[in-house]
Image (tube, rainbow, N blue to C red; front, side, top):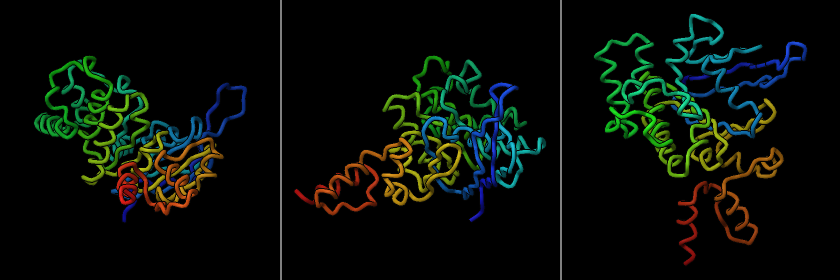
Length: 279
């Protein structure tokens, strides 16, 4: 399968003060993400996961190493628009992404900047809003919407750019449980429609829904594998001051008590279905 993202020995350094030595936020990371995949990147605050996301979108450029998005080298200035059209980005705070006073104008902003024709923009805006169940709010002012609705508008804006990949940088961090569930539902639908998803999150239950999990620690990749492969290493995860999902923790405890709970169970629905056979 073709690669959507190819990160090669990426190092990213920043300086807090010109008189201080550079600080390495990313330390020699190499990572390949295939087209059509759903990858979750998790790690505690300061692990480098958001810095990694911004390097993918060319908001930050490598200090050393290289990042290729759909074959485009992010270090080349002439590639910036191709990179961002290939891999759109949705950030943590939807208020920081909304630039217009009307929902449909906000969704149109990205395609307009790409030079898309007016008729095509209209088509993209309508289809994108319908994809996130927000078409009925197209004439509303964004500040009148809930946090979850605003984030859906931000996702619609990304979809309208027709990217092959969307990088979500903690998109549910500022939402309530209902808003988080709505946004995760849309992310999963986008993946099912063929969009490559890279989800930066600190919610383990969200990461468990991905095909692949990458755990970052102190600017490096500490674990990489399927949810089952990663969450089997509970002690290593706890050593990084992270937790495993509640369902996975429940499975560990039940196995310790002698119940043969499959370690492939990653969500509560599967756990309930398994436990119901013991009625």
